[in-house]
Structures are given as C-alpha cells and as structure tokens.
Length: 251
Ligand SMILES: Nc1ncnc2c1ncn2[C@@H]1O[C@H](COP(=O)(O)OP(=O)(O)OP(=O)(O)O)[C@@H](O)[C@H]1O
Figure: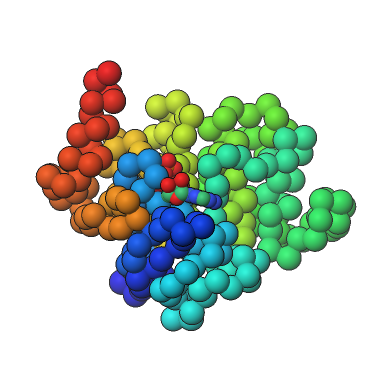
C-alpha cells in the first residue's frame, strides 16, 4: 500500500505546553487508521496540525510526497485533505441536496451555487455522495428536520463532495444512537474504497467494526500501534486508557 500521508517527529505547542511531542504516523492510500487515547492525549491536535488549524512547531507532514507543513488550510483542502470536525457545520435551512451542492469543488457562495445551472456532472456527483452516506431518500429534506446522526452524515457527505484523497474524522459517532453508530461504521468502510480515512474514536465497539490499524496516543506521544487485538492486549494501553474506559462503562 503506497503511503499517502507521512508525519515525522511532529511537535505542536500552545504557549509553551507541548500538546504533541514528536508524533510519527504513516497513512496508506485507502487505509483506515483509527486514533484512540485518553482525553487530552493530543488526538484532535494531530488532525488540527495536518490541516494547519494548529501551527506545527517542528517536524514535517508530507502528503503525496509534498511537504504541506504549516501551509494555508485552504491550500491543504484544495490539495485533497478533507476534515470533519466534532460539531455539525451544516446549513440547517437548506436541503441535504443543497448542502452537498454548496460543498462541491468550485462552488462559489450559497446564492451562486443554488441558482447556477446544475450540470449533469454535478447532479451525478451529488447522487453518488447521497448513496454513499445513505441519504438518497432525504435529498429534498431540510437538514433541520434530520436526526443528529443524519446531520453528521450530511457533513461527511460535504467532505466527500470535495473529492479528497484523505478524510479526517474527529469522533464522528459522538451523540449517535447505537444504530446510527453502526451505520456510520459501514459508511466509513465504504469510504475506504476511494479515500484514506483517519478517525478519532472513543467507542471501542465501533473501533472494532472499522479498524484496520489502531494508533494509541498518550500525553502527546504514540504509546502503541497495531491491530485492535494487539492494542487491546497491550498492558500499557490497558493501564492508561482501556482499563479506565472499562471502569467508566462499569460505573
Ligand atoms: N488551542 C489550544 N490552546 C491551548 N491548549 C490547547 C489547545 N488545543 C488543545 N490544547 C491542549 O492540548 C492538549 C491536547 O488536546 P486535544 O484536544 O488534542 O486532546 P484530545 O486527545 O483530542 O482530547 P479529547 O479526547 O478530550 O478530545 C490538551 O491538554 C489541551 O488542553
């Protein structure tokens, strides 16, 4: 599998506090990498650094062999890295179709996107994204009447509409019902036919459903890496993270 994203010795600091202390991560083309770890481990900061939402203090991020460290976020998005944040960032008063239309590459503003002529290519693209996020029947539904889970899928669809090669998802199942969580896992597995996907997640059942490779972050460093089974059987991971998760579940 060819490497699409290569992160070397990445350090990120906030006013002297080292949130990432030399993280290395390789992501293969069309691979799903799941990142787990305790609160404050640096998971979101890692995704933020990839898309330049947080500045990199040292180290490098290469995408398709090009150094993208600290480039403008818009440039990184244009190059093919799409990021979905934790909270849905959709236009509630518009339909699902209109939201996806707005997200298409080359769209210029709400009014221009909605009133401009819809080419066959754009319609095909949106139809394909709707199928992939399981919302074909909701194309004409205003986003305001969707469930929380469905809104999250619209936002995943908005990322996919930009044709990224790498998709970064920060806790995509937060607040979802068990059924929505399972459906999200299936959406992500389908996504990996076309995109590399990096997912931050806490729900270990979900991690088992989707994960090919799991990376465990702890205090700004990689604590372990491997299959779900390997990390689950790693005493260090049990001690700092999974043991605590199990205690939380029991409580
Ligand atoms: N903008 C910021 N300014 C200052 N400190 C920050 C900033 N963003 C993150 N941090 C700190 O960096 C550390 C890593 O935070 P981060 O959000 O990356 O953790 P996380 O692993 O995603 O945690 P969670 O699971 O709670 O989302 C934390 O100690 C956090 O308080």
